[in-house]
Length: 175
Image 1 (cartoon, rainbow, N blue to C red):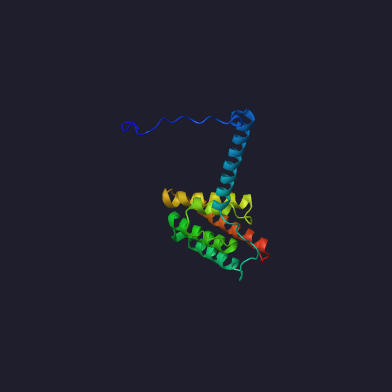
Image 2: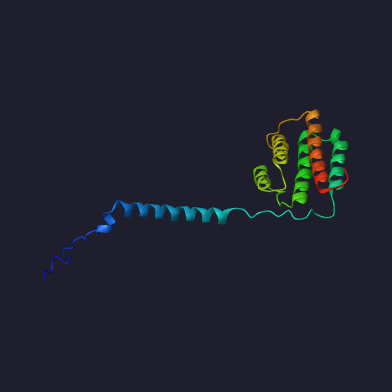
């Protein structure tokens, strides 16, 4: 044995004849695509948020409490600037949505809040759109320091009251 050449000459194995068939290659590609699709489906299924249950409305009925809080804000409207009104009104509506729909989203950003509301089956598209408009306006006042007119402040309170009253009608509460 030659000590300077430690690695012997290796020859490549010949490819089996069945592997050279176009049908075998097509079957292998299809099987590989099926495995990739199965893995993607499993990843999506495991990472999706759990379904929210809306079996029973929460007890006791707190609609009157939320409407009373909005009425107090309406009375204090003259003493509140648009920033304070937007924060207080947003807080009332966020707390209402958390209570009414059993979503733990009160302290989330508007984007997170609307994302959680979007997958909730009890909220219809109209309610989600009204929530988006309401919270978008509040965010512009709170974070961009956009000034709101007295009429816009009244519209903000009206929108919150309408949203709460529509939820009250759906649960069978007294209007």
